[in-house]
Each structure stands twice: as C-alpha cells, then as structure tokens.
Image (cartoon, rainbow, N blue to C red):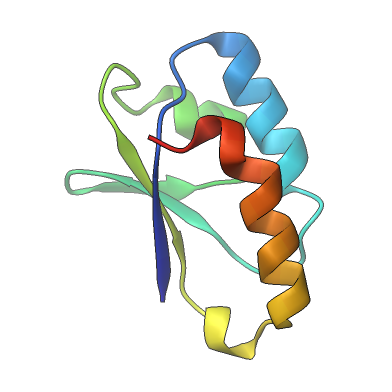
Length: 81
C-alpha cells in the first residue's frame, strides 16, 4: 500500500483532484481518521473534514505499473501536505 498525505482546502482543489484521480484505473481511497471514502467521489470527499490533512491510500500499488505511479505522484504534487 502507498500512502500520501494531502490537503484539499478549496472546492476547486477537490474538483481538480478528482479529475486527476479519475484518469487512473486502480482503486484509491481517502482516509480522515476512521472515515474512508472513494478518492474518485466528489461527494465522498466533501463528507470529510477538509480542514485537516487527509491520506490518499492506494491498496494495490504493488500491481500497478511503476511508471503510472510516478505519473500519479507528479499529478498530485500540488496537493501533497
């Protein structure tokens, strides 16, 4: 599993983040404390406390192409906490 701490403080950031995440075929979750939502769900993300750092989790990262993971990391760079 790969984890990234991210910040999504503005509604525009959430929209941009979801558009980026939806380009990738593997499942990703966002965790805020004990709450977990699909990282590809705008409504799910807005149900989290966005005033705090949240964690992007990629469960099956070991099955993903390393080049794809590098591209993902570059895409989410602006959101890293």
